[in-house]
Amino acid sequence: MSNSLVIARKEFKDILHSGIFLTVLLLLLALTATSVIVSSFVFKSQVDSYQSSLHILKELGKQPGGPQPELFPLNLLRGVIDYLEIVGAILGILLGSLTIAREKNTQTLKLILTRPVSRKDLLFGKMLGNAVFIGIVLVFVGSFALLSLVFVAGAALTLTEAAKLLLVLAISWIYIMAFFSLAAFLFLSMRSLSNALIVAFTIWMVFVLILPQIGDTMDPDNQVPGGFFNSIYFNKEQEKQVLAKFSSYETARNFIEELSVTKNYERTVFALLGIKPEFNGMQVPDILGQKLFDILVVMLFFAAGILADYSVLNKKDILVWD
Amino acid sequence: MKYSKNPSEKQFIIDVRSLSKKYGDNFAVDGLNLKVAEGEIFGFLGHNGAGKTTTVNMLTTLLQPTSGGAFVAGFDILKESVEVRKRIGYLPENIQLYDSMTSYENLEYFAKLSGISKPEESILQVLDFLDAESYRDKKISALSKGMRQRIGIAQAILHEPKVLFLDEPTSGLDPFGVKQLRDTLLRLNKEQGMTIFMNTHLLSEVTKTCSTIGVLSHGKLIHSDSLVNTMKRFNDESSLEQVYLTIEEGHYEK
Image (cartoon, rainbow over all chains, first blue to last red; front, side, top):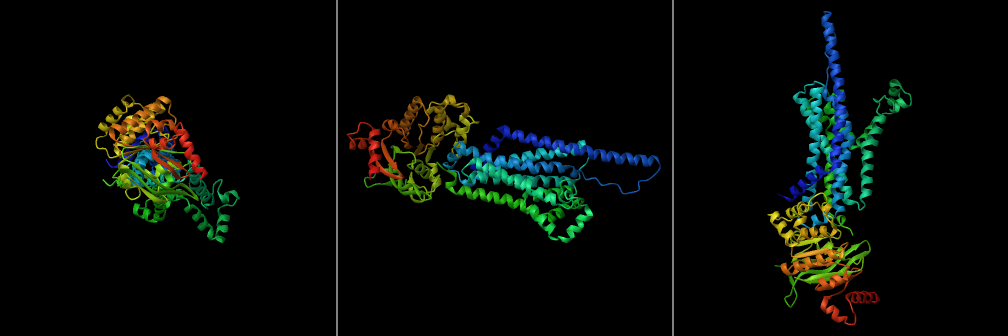
């Protein structure tokens, strides 16, 4: 067995034996369950209500006037994505920090590095072990969501919808791994582990909470309490008049959102799940084409994390201090 | 075998040449030249912050020297670090190992990383050698400091290294643990011919264990000789402690 696989196997076993991660997994599943099951009931009641209306019309000897309403079951996963954005990023940070912090605290990192193990093997092994774990968590979440859709909502997924769900899980995996590699970088490069944790969670707060929140608040579509225009008591018409005079408003809002990898992730998966109505019924390649920039940002964030981890691992002095 | 040799053909398994490590404007190790012959137990002495651990970190390929270099077991620590690592064992100060794993699982992990093809056989042999078979299935978290140290030694010698580096191995051990460690090191040296390079503060142990000593002060080697010669040279002094203090003070006067 190669050194990477030896390290990956141990890493995976460590996570499984750790109570913290079982807790995170259960939390994520509970949130998924709550979100999907509630949405599924709403979906089912909409279907039932439509069916019963049809039945009444038929009994009255009438035909439905309008077209049959289109229902998109993948829309029900919106809540799951909201949780994955937040808890998934925390999971990535926790895994990335603990994988390094544990080895530093116990001095076992020194032991590994005095074995004929290349630093590339060490990095690859640690990433592989954690990647498999994150993959399993996502498979659990995805399967749970799928079962809820089928059995609670009574929705039958088409092959295209199933493919979209798989793509959502794949992008979610990259998103969580990006936070993993970021945390690993901070814990490798910073001498104080507590400072590294503070920096990691500050970055999490900025990317996951603050920037998306600013973007949402400024969103002209967001005529809800807390929305910018709603807060200053501008209705939709007044809002349009104001925006017509500030052509750069939307550009600025978009720029702020683009700064957050979470928003790039959200835009991609929301498009795939059809949460933005214009993407419903669109073919997968077309959606991916439209969201290419967002997908690339998420992937680049992950790639940059791996490169940063690798470069810091190769700076020998960073790993040892006495 | 590429061990460096002196004119009298004595083999030096550790050959340090003008090794320096600088942090900012300060030299942690400053132009260190040192030779340790094969089969010796070398005691590396010095005050806190003298540069002992930094030296060991460089010799074990953990740290990159600022300048100079060294050969360990005949291999260049800079250009042939993997070959060096195949031939050394290392036990850092206050080793904790993986708490949630048993002794056996810890040893198996390091055996695999050392490329040992039959880990079980090696582990059983080492545990037997260290008289530690009874700890085999105990979790590290359940072991005392002394027991843990023995498993730490076990991981360091599993792959039968030529040189064993120990950093303050007696730190935190009770007298019984210190004696056990001493007996183990002497047996390793005698029965397996293993060269041992030991950073230590415990001068009483040096007299009982080491054949050669080196004294480092502020990153510079201020003394290196066999223990017998050292004691002869300072024959007015009653103990190694007195000798050590005289060497250190003499250096400061310079």
